[in-house]
Length: 102
Image (cartoon, rainbow, N blue to C red; front, side):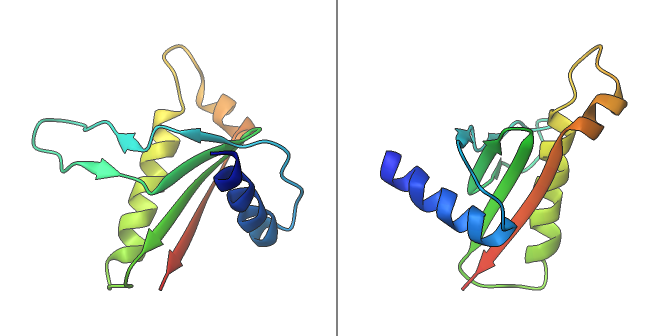
């Protein structure tokens, strides 16, 4: 697992142009809003200090790929506000989506 984290750190460092000290790989399955909601799984969901990264790897880039990946990112943003917390507290957290298509 450490080897994989080091590879992720190098990828993210090259994209963000910033030093990455420690990353935490978070649960990738997103909870459904209701019973009819489609199952949603992000490829890799990472936390780096106060930065949350959704790293999406797509086997091919369809017309809907960017919109779908943005939807995942917005869902992750929405999940980071807890009961009793103000929306202002989200301003201290940063979210980024990285889409890799091949």
